[in-house]
Length: 264
Ligand code: IPE
Ligand code: IPE
Ligand code: MG
Image (cartoon, rainbow, N blue to C red):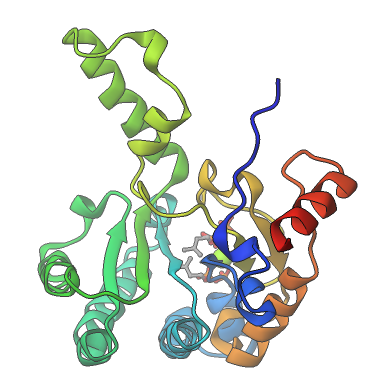
């Protein structure tokens, strides 16, 4: 038998229509920096630098629109294989970002979190990053998750391995391994799944981003390169999202009936 899907509070008619249409968790695959710069005859790193300004304005816009979790794919587990100078420039930009955004993050109550294999980051980045994570832990506002040295397959492997270790120690019965157990071992444990994943830069693929969590995310692909992404583009993505009927396997009529019941 199908398990009933709980109606999220934001899907209920008790919420104002505007609130109901804002995705709770937005994931962004910030792509297209290198090509943007190359088209302008500049080094790829110029695209990453400009991309950092798009991060600042997008974080602000998401917070202002009431997004609860914003996950930015900033550096993948596979990106380590890029030319060393490009990796070094990205690490420097990350350091600059953490230092430069500290006051805005603390001033606006953002909770900064890093997901991925953060231990791989160089110490000069990891230190300030961990410090700001700790400092912002008590904040009550939007969660800003930076996916760094992140790969969804790697994350799933880590979760599966931890479960296997508990089984080996006799603490866990394999029969008790369910979605909650596997999902609970992911870096995003406790957060709502992404409702909307935006990818800039024109490619239509996930590139190892939140593969488990995005099972029912709406996927929005835009040709706009990340350095040019503006709050206006974000609003276009949100407007597109607001028009989607999320069915989670049900029929459209079933979903409509549930919405009607919820509004009674
Ligand atoms: C995204 O832009 C940033 C990172 C992956 C770190 P790219 O650097 O992938 O830019 P393109 O896709 O080559 O244009
Ligand atoms: C995905 O972009 C990773 C980030 C945006 C950080 P990539 O540019 O690495 O993805 P592919 O290689 O085009 O799939
Ligand atoms: Mg790319």
